[in-house]
Image (tube, rainbow, N blue to C red):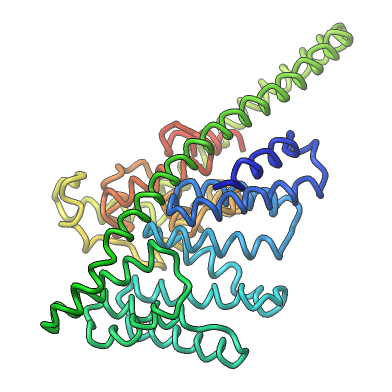
Length: 417
């Protein structure tokens, strides 16, 4: 918490418009954002953590810094897993896994990736696979003389929440030798207290529950610190946006002055450009209408319409679960992406390249949005709950930088080429 204002100061001193920053400035700014994310993660303020990591990754992608990209992607995947955005978490994990053996020589990067893989297994209900990966990780660290007590406790936590309380107990008891903070230590003691209650050992249960006040105090401090950190971050972002906007306006003013000096020439050039643009727009309008007709006549477009119409029921936000049988398969989404690319000059592929933060599931949602169907119908076809799908749409719009309706905005991008 004491370091956080210094990271803000570093970023404020370094960050200008991207085209005016050197590679060294972008690297240092990305590290400052990464360290901000560490603070937010420790305080469990994961939305702020994710936002800061996206900022860090933006710089690292611009300068192609693979080492820091690995670390930021792993932390981003971990934060996304915590808030149950598992598709996105898997996307970032899979993106860096091939690099761990070829680029990164940091053992911590590898162990972090393996732990995250175990968490994703647990989220899918594959407890055996989760515990197997965690035990493999313990063996890996033990062979290198690394401490494994925290890893053993983590196995116990997973076993407890998978309702294997007896099996979890010996792992959780290793908490006494671990270096967890007061919040996590108190939470683990509470779990042990519950186990002793189930074993009808009230004295032991009372002993572990006696630490609850300390845990509550530590948790209260964490929440308070987290709220303060987020408030400071929002102020930092507002000041940064104001400063960058001022720089943009300054550049715009300089351009306007240049245009005034070249006013006469610019006028004649503008007339010529407008004439050409008018003719091109007329041609593009015809071309766009033909492309749209091609898309609407594709097999996958027609199959989607037929599938939604075949059931006969009215799909709404309240009954999405009743139409789970209509979910599309992976092959269908591949066909849909291919149809979009074929009709609109590789639009889906270009969208993925332009916005690398879009996960495969996000890209599928964008392709569905072009069909003109409702959010409820898109949720059915993706096989997810309505609230999960609307959260995905909000996330996509944030990545694309728009507040418009997603379908409207994507069609606008199509018309712009």
